[in-house]
Amino acid sequence: MEDEERTTGAPRPVALLVLADGTVFEGEAIGAATAVRTGELVFNTAMSGYQEILTDPSYAGQVISFTYPHIGNYGVAPDDDESRRPFCRGVVLRDLPRRPSSWRAAEDLESFLCRHGVGGVSGVDTRRLTRHVREAGSIACAFGTAGEAELLAAARSEPGTDGADLVAEVTVAEPYVLAGGPLRVVAYDLGIKATMLRQLLRFASLRVVPAATPAAEVLAAEPDGVLLSNGPGDPAALTPLVGNVRQLLGAVPVLGICLGHQVLAAALGGRTYKLAFGHHGANHPVRRVDGGRVEITSQNHNYAVADGVPAARVTHVNLNDGVIEGLACTDVPAFSVQYHPEAGPGPHDARYLLDEFEKLMLRTGGGRRARRAAGG
Image (cartoon, rainbow, N blue to C red; front, side, top):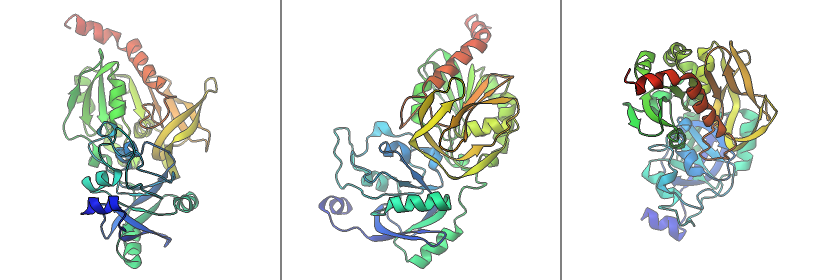
């Protein structure tokens, strides 16, 4: 009956989005509608790629508001999932088309949300909402079909992501192996995306391990390199992981992406801090310090690295606000970027960084591969 109502144009239940500061937005309940759901509200500026965004584990604990007005118009396709399910708390839209238009679509977006138990609100003035978040910063919220007073109380009790180890919620439970290229990479799953795995498989076979895996276990696998993946939450809550990365530095080449960039910085003795409203979108300009080339990048993070990371130089800078977007270690083979070179979704300007990781492993890991080839 619900599917029939969605396609015939029957009205959806009225729902409210209430921010912790008391601001209220009215709309319609979509997806797995409930009385009350809470999370930290952020906005994403991408014009497409909504399925990849919804299934990015880095959104754990957050409610995603899309600034582009029409979300869902080309439906959902299984090949576009970035993880096993959405980890976001909910979604806020201006307009949700009732029928998708694409030969690839296996289902409509609302059916996808219902299947995964994700609720949301459509019909919201997301431009006004975005302006509010830009001024107030990322803010706790509640949404659903309950009354305004109940939703406001729920929003004010939502703790947000500060100090939260959300990686434990999204990381893999057991290690697994993916066959690929000739190199060996151990990938710490902090919320790793499927597109990132596909890009690495071009040149490496992967052993994907839980976030709590000890450094000694990683090194016992004799990898040519280690990836610190993207993921959700506050890097300051990941002290054990930072300690493990500190033990890996100098022993094996390391690449950090997004949360992995922040973890690498912390392992080097750097500091992280929370941005006012984060970077979420597929159109952020980043300048390479060497040569000045500008890349348009895909980003999703609420925390950033502060200036002054020991034994590292800044390689990339965000042109919107000057945030450090890349680091290269000066005394060990390791580097990191705050954005997503795998670009799922997003432009492919930065995919060369994964090739740079391959080159770094080839330069520093030849001895290990030669010994393996000789049976040593």
